[in-house]
Amino acid sequence: MPGRTTILAGAGLAALAALGLALYGSGLLPGNTGLGLGPCAGSAPALARVDTAAKGEVAAMQALPQARPAPEIRFKGPDGAETALADLKGRLLLVNLWATWCAPCKAEMPALDRLQAQLGGPDFAVVAINVDTRNLDKPPEWLKQAGIRALASYADPGGRVLPMIQRDTQSPGLPTTMLIDARGCTLGVMKGPAAWSSPDGLALIRAALGRTS
Image (cartoon, rainbow, N blue to C red; front, side, top):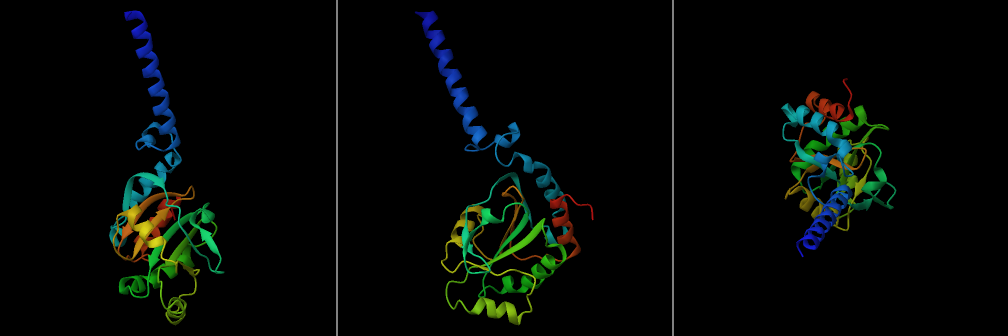
């Protein structure tokens, strides 16, 4: 019965199309940004600005082809209570992983501190997460000795954050830094240290925020 076969085939295609639309619309399949769907579709303008501003001292910032939801990591906040990255959503975040055994991490920490002091506020924050899992009194003592005052103290003594970020960013080493917008979507990844408080670094953050100055 050709007529019935045609109707059934058409119904099957319609069902597949509906399923595909549901998956793309939910962000479960890649490529939905081009359709204007998904949780990070609205991040496209900021992503383009970051791509343009990643130059000079911050040229190693890799803007993603498409913004994607940041990993769901949990860590200790300044008060010692467990917090989640999602709890900080609502402003641009520069999430930096560092350790006291990582010389390049410690070398860039003063620049991150200056960046927070200069641009930190209701729209932007540096979230520097220490990933030491032993000698846990060492990181806060080092920050104090290094004169780091503007940065809040975040830590992951349980060792959960580093492997999750490594998988998400494909960055095997430290420091690793993610630029995450107010929607909770990753715009770019920096693998290695950078002069964050340089004019280029400040310009990158301002571009991500949509500021001209």
